Image (cartoon, rainbow, N blue to C red; front, side, top):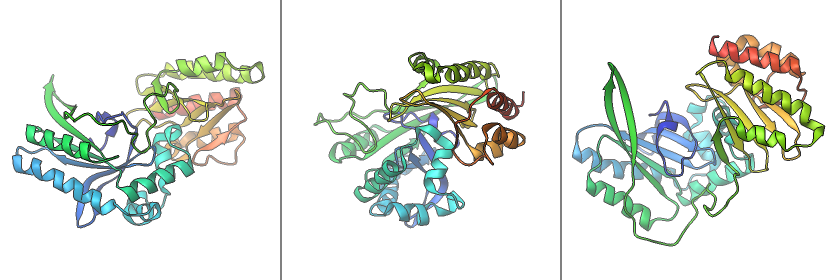
Length: 330
């Protein structure tokens, strides 16, 4: 579960990024410490044992970890709590390397993180083999009497199909008394009809935006759509999604599986202007031989983390296509 946090069926389906495993919080070590792309910390505790008492104790344990985080500043969180896990990188840089375009803007991210730490507005995730009814009721009670604290109770079932093990997580939804609507930190009101912050599968959303742009940028954008269609044919190791940003930009995200990270993020801004964002850490891990070629084609001295390329032509798109081929081994 720690290696693939996106498989956890969390309430609201937030994108989360794992910061570390066995992270010291207070006097104990939390199984997994993660963060939502909005900036809200996520504490994940796993108890996959047939022991009723341990399943009861996990609630106290995860609340103890939350208490250890409560009151810290965003700077303390980054420089003291997760510094070793970041390995010298900045927190926002580490999150962006994983989630890329889905991450909130710098000021918004740190404001959400600071608010969550000061007010104790965390997401707590309990992953168990089974969940007794009394535990389900306890989780429902805690969420009902707290404001802004989200607790996800996940049960995991293991199966063997054709000799291969499969793990299926399922979220257990406790019954809660009706109460007034509230908006959790990092989330927008459900009454909004805007697609802002929404991630959808496929390139269709990006294609629709391109179709509605002015002729000034249309030729380059059409080339980007054709490029996306081309790399979509590289095989099942690639996932293409469209992200709707908060400033009305639409971002095409061609991501490598199973890590779900991309060499590039392709932007179409509100005014139709295109740009390609390049991710150095992903190139270093997935397509190191292509780094210099892509940088040269983009007119950049080197590929930096999240570096933007605005010189978009056939040479750059061909170099990026070959980089994805390298990453996929095809």
